[in-house]
Length: 433
Image (cartoon, rainbow, N blue to C red; front, side, top):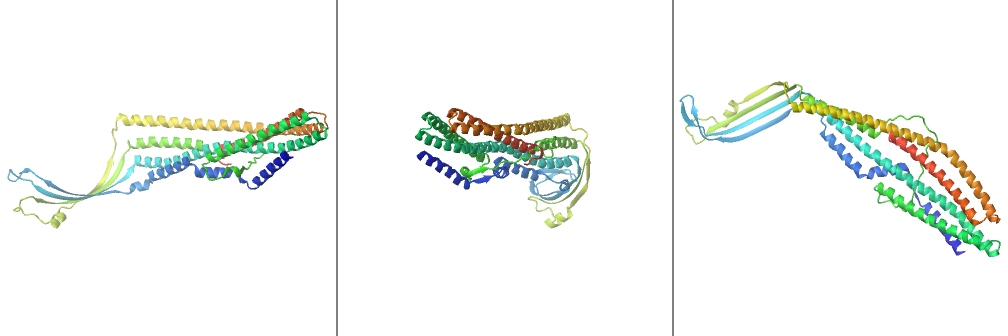
C-alpha cells in the first residue's frame, strides 16, 4: 500500500505542476530567439553601416568647398629684369584662397551610388539569411522537444494502467487467486516503465534546456515550460510558389551588386564634366628693407584679388591595360554570381520538391498508422481481459502493451513529422509560419 500511496502522490504532483506550466508556441520561440540572437544584432549594425556609406546621387552635386590661408617667408636673391642686377628676394608672404568645385556629370560616381544602395539591400538580405537559417535550427529543436514531451505523456498515461494492474495483482496474490510469479512479472514491468519514464523526463528537460540555450534565453525556468503543437492542415498542395526565400533573394542581389561593380569600373573610361570657381588674394612685404615703399595690408588684399571660374570636360583616352583587366575580371565575377543565383534557385526547388514528397508520404501513412493503433488498442483490451481471467500470463500481456505503446509512438512521430515538414515548406516558400 505504501507503494500505491507513492504513485498517487507522484501523479498528484505532476498534475499540480502542470497546472502552473507556461505554454510556449513555435511563434513565441521564434520571436524571443530572434530578439536575443547576437549574430542578428551584428548584422543589424552592418545594415546601419551600409546606410551610412550610401549617398544619394543628387547629394553628389553638392560642391566641394575649401578655404586655404598661409603665411610664408622667402629668403635669397633674384635678378631684377629692369637693372639686370641681383637684388634681395627676402619676402614675407600672406595668401588667402577660396576654391569650390562640383561634378556635374560623373558616371563612376553614379554607378558607385547605385552600388552602395544595393549594398544596403544586400546587408538586409544577409541578415534575413541568418534569421532564416536560425529559424530552421529552432524548428528542428522545437519539434525534437515536442516529440519528447508528447512521448512522455503517453508513457505516463500507460504507467497509470500498470499501477492499477499491479495493485490488482497484489490483491489477487494475497487471496491466492494468482501465483506469485505473475506478481514478480508485474513488479518487474513496473520497475522497467518507472525507469523509462525517469529517462524520458531527464531527456525532455535536457532538450528543453538546449532549446532555450539556442534562443539565448537564460531567464526562463524551463522546468515549468510546455510546448504547443503546431496544427498543420491535413492537405498536400501539388505546387508551391516561392515568394520570399532569403537565400534566393541574397543570391539575386549579389548578382546585381557585381553588375554595378562593372559599371563603376567602366565609369572611369567615360567623360566627366565639372564646374569650378576660385578666389585668391595676397599680401607681401620685403624683409629688412624699410626703404622700399609697400602698400598697407588692406590695400594689397583689395588690389590683389583674383577670380577664376569655368567648366572642365575630361575625356579619358587611355587608362592602362590593368584597368581593362579589372573590368574583364569584374565581368567574370558577375557571370559567376549569376550562375550561383541560378544554382541556389535549383537547390531550393529541389529541396521543396523533396519536402512536398515527404509531406505527402506522412499524410498517406497517417490512416494506416491510426488503423494499426486501433487494432493494438483492441488487442490490449482483449489481452487485459485474458490476463485478469488467468488465460494469459504477465509476460504476454506486457508484450501486447508494448506493441500498443509503439503503435501510439508511431502515430505521434508521423503526426509531428507532418507538422514539421509543413512549417519547413512555409519557411522555404514564404519565410514565415
